[in-house]
Image (cartoon, rainbow, N blue to C red):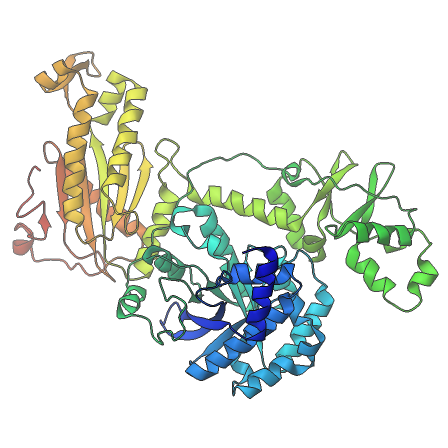
Length: 617
């Protein structure tokens, strides 16, 4: 259909009010209750404008965006009332539409009243469509709606032009994280850190977070474990004209599952010292003699600039913020009196100035200890006292977050598997959640003489291949594989078939490691070398020992106890000749009691490998 015909078709849809509403449930992630529904608009099923993306794109291009949005709001309110849905209605509204005079004068309140909906049940969900707004006017409009009883939400946090600033300025009741950061979060440590940071800010500001775009069980469990308040997406419920009022029993069962999600791990261990130079932005400065009128014109011509540095002879004097200048000029007669005067009168001479070689950790400390305006206004970066450029609080926060991610992961550089810190963190999460799991200490037998005889490159190859074998036989959505160091690994299994997986690991290792030896070594059952006295000896071929414990809720209190028990199980496994598996099925240390001497000397049936007593696998 041609553009002209599309506009005519759109006009007909508006005149005939031929739009329909769908509602997608929003679920509380801890209780499983449906707290409300987002109202979504659709064109007729046989229309080229069925999709809301196409509908609003054509409407904006034809100058009908506000009219279509107003009609959409009316249709959603009417259908919400007709279906008598419980909970809150999340109503999409653009800032442009929110600032329309007829809306701020009470049209939305009148529409809500006509359909018998209390304003307290309506959440105005602000969606961004342009890079800049008049935040002062927008703030006043939002305050006006709050006074009428409406709540405010910010949609698609992380996608838009200025959603973080909207959050800071408007202080909404809800923020909705864009689906980009939710989908595939179980595979992306950067997305995980972004969502975790948003949740931390939300806890500080008293805002409830809604994760959009949850499409898999794994995403659902990870979002739940991060403490996100609410979720929305196809896995919870698709948009429908008459949506279900309760989640499915399967969904409720998943939410109440006592296990934990496996967080993605950073595959890097870079420990470079990052300095302020990393976040340098070249911002052309102005002279203190520049007139205030010319400075205002510069701000108008460069809408992306929020601050401008003032420099004389290469030395930074301070900053002038857009807000400070505009606010003063808004006062009566100020521009007439001071417009032609030098801008020096508006300089913030207490601006934060730092050298390009300042470590970001130190710069972050300075910003935190200084006035909060430095985080918003940014700071000046110099080179031996000479002005270089600017840094922003946003960039500093991003880089600090990235550095913290690297420091927290401690990924093993050889296998890129998580090391001791992530291992301990995962164990503590399992214990805190009251999860049932199995912890297995994995050790390669006779590795040191092999490494000495065949060389470290072959030794590294064996370790890397062992790590891959462990990963291949673990469920990435339930099980955690960590590398303690050297030839020692720890795996934490929530899978029900843990013993089957342990035996599969042994079988795979046995088939793979034989390829690391020569035919002669395999035939003689070992490889020749010398002991410490220089005497010839035959070293056994590499084997693997697995020592596992079963962890029941309340039986262990810390990762230290888990590590100690698993290490003891590994010692028992290494006493068995060849590839071995030892499983300690006894209760944990907090419930084990001392046995009488005559009983303690008897074999304990809770210690086993496979079925029955300890044996070679």
